[in-house]
Image 1 (cartoon, rainbow, N blue to C red):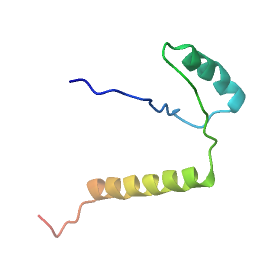
Image 2 (image 1 turned 90 degrees about the horizontal axis):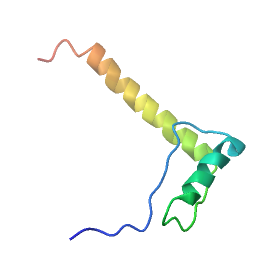
Image 3 (image 1 turned 135 degrees about the vertical axis):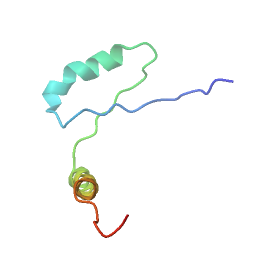
Image 4 (image 1 turned 90 degrees about the vertical axis):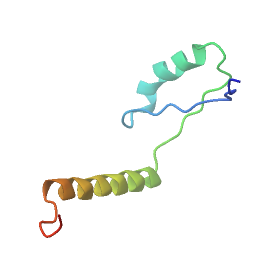
Length: 72
């Protein structure tokens, strides 16, 4: 049996200006079956999450580049 979907999220590659996003939002609204499109404004919480993810990735990369020499 196939699952039924009630919606989906679209994430932009990076934050974009609201007026630059209007054509994209209009195009999504034109898709068959789209009932509504809502926007989400960037906030400080987004910045915090991005910085934490960046830090975690950086730490993992350092461990790959400079592995502990005492462990085998």
